[in-house]
Length: 325
Ligand SMILES: *[C@@H]1O[C@H](CO)[C@@H](O)[C@H](O)[C@H]1NC(C)=O
Ligand SMILES: *[C@@H]1O[C@H](CO)[C@@H](O)[C@H](O)[C@H]1NC(C)=O
Image (cartoon, rainbow, N blue to C red; front, side, top):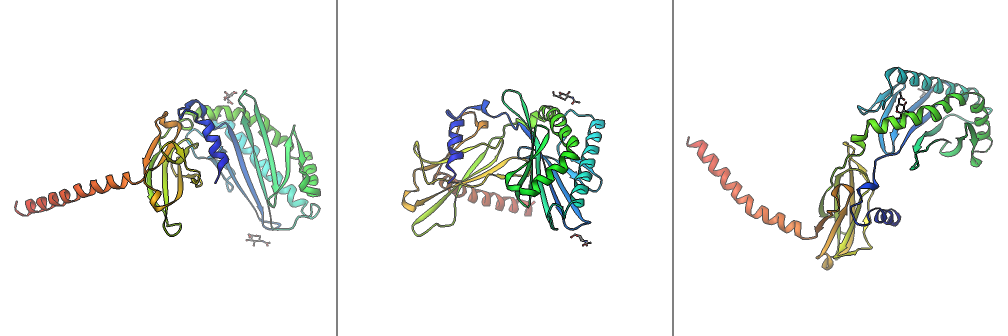
Protein backbone atom coordinates (compact mmCIF):
# COMPACT_ATOMS: atom_id res chain seq x y z
CA UNK A 1 0.00 0.00 0.00
CA UNK A 2 1.23 3.44 -0.86
CA UNK A 3 0.87 4.88 2.59
CA UNK A 4 2.97 7.98 2.09
CA UNK A 5 0.90 9.52 -0.74
CA UNK A 6 -2.24 8.85 1.32
CA UNK A 7 -0.76 10.55 4.36
CA UNK A 8 0.31 13.49 2.24
CA UNK A 9 -3.17 13.80 0.84
CA UNK A 10 -4.64 13.69 4.32
CA UNK A 11 -2.35 16.58 5.14
CA UNK A 12 -3.58 18.38 2.02
CA UNK A 13 -7.24 17.92 2.88
CA UNK A 14 -7.46 18.64 6.59
CA UNK A 15 -11.11 19.61 6.49
CA UNK A 16 -11.74 18.28 3.02
CA UNK A 17 -12.32 21.70 1.52
CA UNK A 18 -8.88 23.09 0.90
CA UNK A 19 -9.39 24.47 -2.58
CA UNK A 20 -6.47 26.87 -2.37
CA UNK A 21 -3.94 24.03 -2.19
CA UNK A 22 -4.09 23.21 -5.91
CA UNK A 23 -3.27 25.82 -8.48
CA UNK A 24 -2.31 23.47 -11.30
CA UNK A 25 1.16 22.68 -12.63
CA UNK A 26 4.19 24.87 -11.89
CA UNK A 27 6.85 23.38 -14.15
CA UNK A 28 7.55 22.75 -17.81
CA UNK A 29 9.92 20.10 -19.11
CA UNK A 30 11.01 18.57 -22.36
CA UNK A 31 11.85 14.89 -22.67
CA UNK A 32 14.34 13.91 -25.34
CA UNK A 33 15.00 10.27 -26.16
CA UNK A 34 17.73 9.84 -28.75
CA UNK A 35 18.27 6.38 -30.13
CA UNK A 36 21.50 5.74 -32.02
CA UNK A 37 20.88 2.47 -33.90
CA UNK A 38 24.09 2.54 -35.89
CA UNK A 39 26.55 5.01 -37.34
CA UNK A 40 24.00 6.42 -39.80
CA UNK A 41 20.60 6.04 -38.15
CA UNK A 42 19.45 8.17 -35.20
CA UNK A 43 15.96 8.89 -33.97
CA UNK A 44 14.94 11.74 -31.67
CA UNK A 45 11.66 11.50 -29.81
CA UNK A 46 10.77 14.79 -28.18
CA UNK A 47 7.79 15.89 -26.13
CA UNK A 48 6.95 18.90 -23.95
CA UNK A 49 5.07 18.63 -20.66
CA UNK A 50 3.47 20.73 -17.95
CA UNK A 51 3.99 18.16 -15.22
CA UNK A 52 1.98 15.16 -16.44
CA UNK A 53 0.13 16.99 -19.19
CA UNK A 54 1.71 16.76 -22.63
CA UNK A 55 1.39 20.01 -24.56
CA UNK A 56 4.08 19.62 -27.27
CA UNK A 57 5.23 17.01 -29.69
CA UNK A 58 8.08 17.25 -32.19
CA UNK A 59 8.02 16.37 -35.86
CA UNK A 60 11.54 15.09 -36.52
CA UNK A 61 11.15 15.08 -40.30
CA UNK A 62 10.33 18.76 -40.57
CA UNK A 63 12.11 19.75 -37.36
CA UNK A 64 9.10 21.65 -36.06
CA UNK A 65 7.08 21.63 -32.88
CA UNK A 66 3.58 20.18 -32.67
CA UNK A 67 1.21 22.19 -30.47
CA UNK A 68 -1.23 19.90 -28.70
CA UNK A 69 -3.26 22.61 -26.97
CA UNK A 70 -4.69 25.82 -28.35
CA UNK A 71 -2.55 27.65 -25.76
CA UNK A 72 0.67 25.58 -26.17
CA UNK A 73 2.53 28.57 -27.63
CA UNK A 74 2.05 30.50 -24.40
CA UNK A 75 2.54 34.20 -25.10
CA UNK A 76 5.26 33.66 -27.73
CA UNK A 77 4.78 35.09 -31.19
CA UNK A 78 5.06 32.88 -34.27
CA UNK A 79 8.40 34.53 -35.11
CA UNK A 80 9.74 33.67 -31.69
CA UNK A 81 8.50 30.07 -31.99
CA UNK A 82 10.25 29.77 -35.37
CA UNK A 83 13.46 31.05 -33.79
CA UNK A 84 13.23 28.52 -30.96
CA UNK A 85 12.56 25.68 -33.39
CA UNK A 86 15.68 26.72 -35.26
CA UNK A 87 17.71 26.65 -32.03
CA UNK A 88 16.38 23.20 -31.24
CA UNK A 89 17.24 21.92 -34.72
CA UNK A 90 20.80 23.26 -34.33
CA UNK A 91 20.99 21.62 -30.90
CA UNK A 92 19.92 18.20 -32.25
CA UNK A 93 22.23 18.49 -35.21
CA UNK A 94 25.15 19.38 -32.96
CA UNK A 95 24.27 16.73 -30.42
CA UNK A 96 24.07 13.91 -32.97
CA UNK A 97 27.19 15.05 -34.81
CA UNK A 98 29.25 15.26 -31.62
CA UNK A 99 28.11 11.88 -30.34
CA UNK A 100 28.72 10.14 -33.67
CA UNK A 101 32.14 11.72 -34.04
CA UNK A 102 33.27 10.48 -30.64
CA UNK A 103 31.60 7.09 -30.31
CA UNK A 104 34.78 5.04 -30.03
CA UNK A 105 36.56 7.62 -27.89
CA UNK A 106 33.57 7.65 -25.50
CA UNK A 107 33.61 3.85 -25.39
CA UNK A 108 30.06 3.61 -26.65
CA UNK A 109 28.86 0.78 -28.82
CA UNK A 110 25.83 0.90 -31.12
CA UNK A 111 22.98 0.64 -30.45
CA UNK A 112 22.54 2.99 -27.48
CA UNK A 113 20.11 5.54 -26.15
CA UNK A 114 20.29 8.94 -24.45
CA UNK A 115 17.46 10.23 -22.30
CA UNK A 116 17.34 13.88 -21.39
CA UNK A 117 14.89 15.80 -19.25
CA UNK A 118 15.20 19.56 -19.23
CA UNK A 119 13.00 22.44 -18.19
CA UNK A 120 12.21 24.91 -15.46
CA UNK A 121 10.07 25.14 -12.37
CA UNK A 122 8.34 28.02 -10.65
CA UNK A 123 9.02 27.97 -6.90
CA UNK A 124 6.62 29.39 -4.30
CA UNK A 125 8.68 32.55 -3.76
CA UNK A 126 8.48 33.32 -7.49
CA UNK A 127 11.98 32.12 -8.40
CA UNK A 128 12.27 29.97 -11.50
CA UNK A 129 14.80 27.16 -11.31
CA UNK A 130 16.02 25.45 -14.48
CA UNK A 131 17.17 21.87 -14.69
CA UNK A 132 18.81 19.56 -17.24
CA UNK A 133 19.62 15.92 -16.57
CA UNK A 134 20.93 13.37 -19.00
CA UNK A 135 21.02 9.58 -18.78
CA UNK A 136 22.92 7.09 -20.91
CA UNK A 137 21.62 3.50 -21.19
CA UNK A 138 19.28 4.31 -18.30
CA UNK A 139 22.01 5.50 -15.88
CA UNK A 140 22.55 9.06 -14.69
CA UNK A 141 25.17 10.66 -16.85
CA UNK A 142 25.25 14.40 -16.31
CA UNK A 143 23.39 17.52 -15.31
CA UNK A 144 23.75 21.21 -16.05
CA UNK A 145 24.39 23.52 -13.13
CA UNK A 146 25.33 27.17 -13.24
CA UNK A 147 25.70 27.26 -17.03
CA UNK A 148 28.00 24.29 -17.34
CA UNK A 149 27.86 20.53 -17.60
CA UNK A 150 28.58 18.48 -14.47
CA UNK A 151 29.27 14.75 -14.87
CA UNK A 152 27.48 12.32 -12.53
CA UNK A 153 29.75 10.11 -10.43
CA UNK A 154 28.09 6.92 -11.76
CA UNK A 155 28.61 8.14 -15.34
CA UNK A 156 32.36 7.47 -15.03
CA UNK A 157 34.75 8.46 -17.75
CA UNK A 158 31.98 8.61 -20.37
CA UNK A 159 30.18 11.31 -18.39
CA UNK A 160 33.33 13.37 -18.04
CA UNK A 161 34.07 13.16 -21.74
CA UNK A 162 30.50 13.95 -22.80
CA UNK A 163 30.55 16.97 -20.49
CA UNK A 164 33.82 18.17 -21.95
CA UNK A 165 32.29 17.95 -25.43
CA UNK A 166 29.12 19.74 -24.35
CA UNK A 167 31.00 22.49 -22.56
CA UNK A 168 33.06 23.16 -25.68
CA UNK A 169 30.15 22.88 -28.08
CA UNK A 170 26.42 23.29 -27.73
CA UNK A 171 26.36 24.52 -24.12
CA UNK A 172 25.52 28.06 -25.31
CA UNK A 173 22.35 26.91 -27.02
CA UNK A 174 21.35 24.73 -24.10
CA UNK A 175 21.84 27.48 -21.52
CA UNK A 176 19.98 30.01 -23.64
CA UNK A 177 16.97 27.70 -23.91
CA UNK A 178 17.24 26.69 -20.27
CA UNK A 179 17.84 30.00 -18.50
CA UNK A 180 16.29 32.54 -20.88
CA UNK A 181 13.60 30.91 -22.98
CA UNK A 182 12.18 28.45 -20.47
CA UNK A 183 11.41 30.85 -17.58
CA UNK A 184 9.78 33.38 -19.91
CA UNK A 185 7.83 30.65 -21.66
CA UNK A 186 6.73 29.03 -18.40
CA UNK A 187 5.09 32.16 -17.00
CA UNK A 188 3.40 32.86 -20.32
CA UNK A 189 2.06 29.35 -20.86
CA UNK A 190 0.80 28.97 -17.29
CA UNK A 191 -1.16 32.14 -17.85
CA UNK A 192 -2.38 31.25 -21.35
CA UNK A 193 -3.55 27.80 -20.22
CA UNK A 194 -4.95 28.95 -16.89
CA UNK A 195 -8.61 28.17 -17.58
CA UNK A 196 -7.71 24.65 -18.65
CA UNK A 197 -5.00 23.99 -16.03
CA UNK A 198 -6.91 25.27 -13.03
CA UNK A 199 -10.26 23.75 -13.94
CA UNK A 200 -12.05 21.60 -11.40
CA UNK A 201 -13.87 18.51 -12.64
CA UNK A 202 -15.88 16.54 -10.11
CA UNK A 203 -15.30 12.81 -9.81
CA UNK A 204 -18.03 10.24 -10.24
CA UNK A 205 -17.80 7.08 -8.19
CA UNK A 206 -19.31 3.62 -8.25
CA UNK A 207 -18.76 0.33 -6.48
CA UNK A 208 -18.32 -3.19 -7.79
CA UNK A 209 -16.88 -6.46 -6.57
CA UNK A 210 -13.62 -7.68 -8.02
CA UNK A 211 -12.34 -11.25 -8.48
CA UNK A 212 -12.70 -13.20 -5.21
CA UNK A 213 -9.42 -12.93 -3.28
CA UNK A 214 -10.07 -16.28 -1.55
CA UNK A 215 -12.82 -18.50 -0.12
CA UNK A 216 -15.27 -16.52 1.99
CA UNK A 217 -13.72 -13.21 0.97
CA UNK A 218 -14.90 -10.31 -1.15
CA UNK A 219 -12.89 -7.73 -3.04
CA UNK A 220 -14.73 -4.43 -2.80
CA UNK A 221 -13.81 -2.05 -5.58
CA UNK A 222 -14.42 1.68 -5.50
CA UNK A 223 -14.03 3.31 -8.93
CA UNK A 224 -13.41 7.05 -8.98
CA UNK A 225 -13.75 8.47 -12.46
CA UNK A 226 -13.15 11.59 -14.49
CA UNK A 227 -11.72 14.04 -11.95
CA UNK A 228 -9.27 16.91 -12.35
CA UNK A 229 -6.82 17.93 -10.95
CA UNK A 230 -5.00 14.76 -10.05
CA UNK A 231 -4.76 14.81 -6.23
CA UNK A 232 -7.58 12.78 -4.73
CA UNK A 233 -8.19 11.01 -1.44
CA UNK A 234 -10.15 7.78 -1.51
CA UNK A 235 -10.59 5.44 1.45
CA UNK A 236 -12.71 2.48 2.47
CA UNK A 237 -14.36 3.35 5.80
CA UNK A 238 -16.45 1.77 8.51
CA UNK A 239 -18.29 4.74 9.94
CA UNK A 240 -15.54 7.28 10.59
CA UNK A 241 -12.81 4.66 10.78
CA UNK A 242 -10.41 4.33 7.86
CA UNK A 243 -9.82 0.74 6.81
CA UNK A 244 -6.10 0.03 6.92
CA UNK A 245 -6.37 -2.68 4.26
CA UNK A 246 -7.39 -0.15 1.62
CA UNK A 247 -5.30 -0.62 -1.52
CA UNK A 248 -4.86 2.25 -3.89
CA UNK A 249 -4.31 1.48 -7.59
CA UNK A 250 -2.36 3.63 -10.03
CA UNK A 251 -3.84 6.91 -11.18
CA UNK A 252 -4.70 6.33 -14.83
CA UNK A 253 -5.16 9.12 -17.36
CA UNK A 254 -8.29 9.49 -19.48
CA UNK A 255 -8.09 10.84 -23.03
CA UNK A 256 -9.77 14.10 -21.94
CA UNK A 257 -7.02 14.83 -19.39
CA UNK A 258 -9.05 13.71 -16.36
CA UNK A 259 -8.02 10.85 -14.05
CA UNK A 260 -9.28 7.47 -12.98
CA UNK A 261 -8.51 5.64 -9.73
CA UNK A 262 -9.48 2.23 -8.40
CA UNK A 263 -9.34 1.60 -4.65
CA UNK A 264 -9.96 -1.88 -3.28
CA UNK A 265 -10.51 -3.63 0.03
CA UNK A 266 -10.30 -7.36 0.72
CA UNK A 267 -12.86 -8.30 3.42
CA UNK A 268 -14.48 -11.41 4.86
CA UNK A 269 -17.85 -11.74 3.10
CA UNK A 270 -19.78 -11.30 6.35
CA UNK A 271 -18.10 -8.00 7.13
CA UNK A 272 -18.85 -6.08 3.94
CA UNK A 273 -22.11 -4.60 5.19
CA UNK A 274 -21.69 -1.13 6.67
CA UNK A 275 -18.50 -0.37 4.74
CA UNK A 276 -18.37 2.75 2.63
CA UNK A 277 -16.04 4.33 0.13
CA UNK A 278 -15.26 7.97 0.82
CA UNK A 279 -13.88 10.36 -1.82
CA UNK A 280 -12.37 13.78 -1.13
CA UNK A 281 -11.42 16.03 -4.02
CA UNK A 282 -10.79 19.75 -4.39
CA UNK A 283 -13.72 20.04 -6.86
CA UNK A 284 -16.20 18.79 -4.26
CA UNK A 285 -15.80 21.78 -1.99
CA UNK A 286 -15.85 19.67 1.18
CA UNK A 287 -18.92 17.65 0.13
CA UNK A 288 -17.27 14.23 0.15
CA UNK A 289 -18.76 11.48 -1.97
CA UNK A 290 -19.75 8.54 0.28
CA UNK A 291 -20.98 5.29 -1.24
CA UNK A 292 -22.21 2.45 1.00
CA UNK A 293 -21.54 -1.14 0.07
CA UNK A 294 -24.82 -2.90 -0.67
CA UNK A 295 -26.94 0.26 -0.96
CA UNK A 296 -26.24 1.04 -4.54
CA UNK A 297 -27.03 -2.48 -5.71
CA UNK A 298 -30.27 -2.63 -3.80
CA UNK A 299 -31.34 0.76 -5.11
CA UNK A 300 -30.28 -0.35 -8.60
CA UNK A 301 -32.24 -3.59 -8.29
CA UNK A 302 -35.30 -1.79 -7.00
CA UNK A 303 -35.09 0.56 -9.95
CA UNK A 304 -34.86 -2.40 -12.34
CA UNK A 305 -37.69 -4.24 -10.60
CA UNK A 306 -40.02 -1.27 -11.00
CA UNK A 307 -38.87 0.14 -14.30
CA UNK A 308 -38.30 -2.91 -16.51
CA UNK A 309 -41.89 -4.26 -16.35
CA UNK A 310 -43.28 -0.78 -16.93
CA UNK A 311 -41.01 -0.28 -19.92
CA UNK A 312 -42.01 -3.63 -21.42
CA UNK A 313 -45.66 -2.79 -20.91
CA UNK A 314 -45.16 0.56 -22.57
CA UNK A 315 -43.33 -1.05 -25.49
CA UNK A 316 -46.11 -3.64 -25.99
CA UNK A 317 -48.69 -0.92 -25.91
CA UNK A 318 -46.73 1.14 -28.45
CA UNK A 319 -46.39 -1.85 -30.77
CA UNK A 320 -50.08 -2.64 -30.45
CA UNK A 321 -50.92 0.97 -31.13
CA UNK A 322 -48.73 1.13 -34.27
CA UNK A 323 -50.18 -2.14 -35.62
CA UNK A 324 -53.79 -1.01 -35.15
CA UNK A 325 -53.39 2.49 -36.46
C1 LIG B 1 20.90 1.31 -39.28
O1 LIG B 1 19.71 1.05 -38.52
C2 LIG B 1 18.51 1.22 -39.22
C3 LIG B 1 17.36 1.04 -38.26
O2 LIG B 1 17.48 -0.07 -37.45
C4 LIG B 1 18.46 0.23 -40.38
O3 LIG B 1 17.27 0.39 -41.10
C5 LIG B 1 19.67 0.46 -41.29
O4 LIG B 1 19.70 -0.50 -42.32
C6 LIG B 1 20.97 0.40 -40.49
N1 LIG B 1 22.08 0.80 -41.35
C7 LIG B 1 23.27 0.23 -41.29
C8 LIG B 1 24.32 0.81 -42.18
O5 LIG B 1 23.50 -0.72 -40.55
C1 LIG C 1 5.40 36.56 -21.81
O1 LIG C 1 5.12 36.57 -20.42
C2 LIG C 1 6.29 36.66 -19.61
C3 LIG C 1 5.84 36.55 -18.17
O2 LIG C 1 4.68 37.26 -17.90
C4 LIG C 1 7.04 37.95 -19.90
O3 LIG C 1 8.22 37.99 -19.12
C5 LIG C 1 7.36 38.02 -21.37
O4 LIG C 1 7.99 39.23 -21.70
C6 LIG C 1 6.08 37.85 -22.20
N1 LIG C 1 6.31 37.97 -23.63
C7 LIG C 1 7.16 37.24 -24.37
C8 LIG C 1 7.12 37.47 -25.82
O5 LIG C 1 7.94 36.44 -23.88
